[in-house]
Length: 121
Image (cartoon, rainbow, N blue to C red; front, side, top):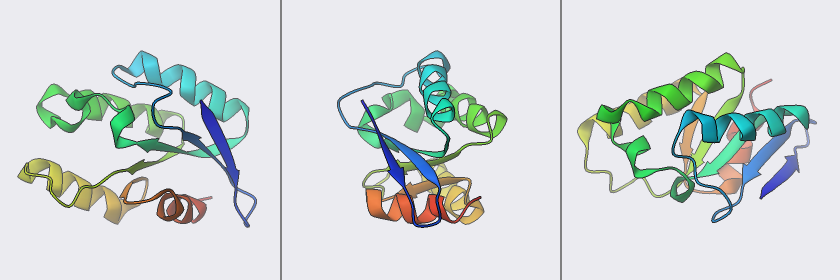
């Protein structure tokens, strides 16, 4: 199930609610991106539990494939979860670098995700 948020700046952001979808392949994502884009969203919020565990194992390449789709469709992404205890140095570095660039954001809450995505036009 997708919930749509409208920010004070007039930006539409789609949020995939936890337990409603599982994203394990790029094909899983494409339908969601198409729906969100059709409804005018420029950003997507995904809860970490919605993503396959392979997404967080950078060796699988799934994160790169999925994030490339966001670049291709010019849509911003925020992933909500508790990333403080990430054990993989490569994943910690990836999260830090992503948050610095701003196109992909790893946040702790939906409110923080909306605020970050609202800054991108």
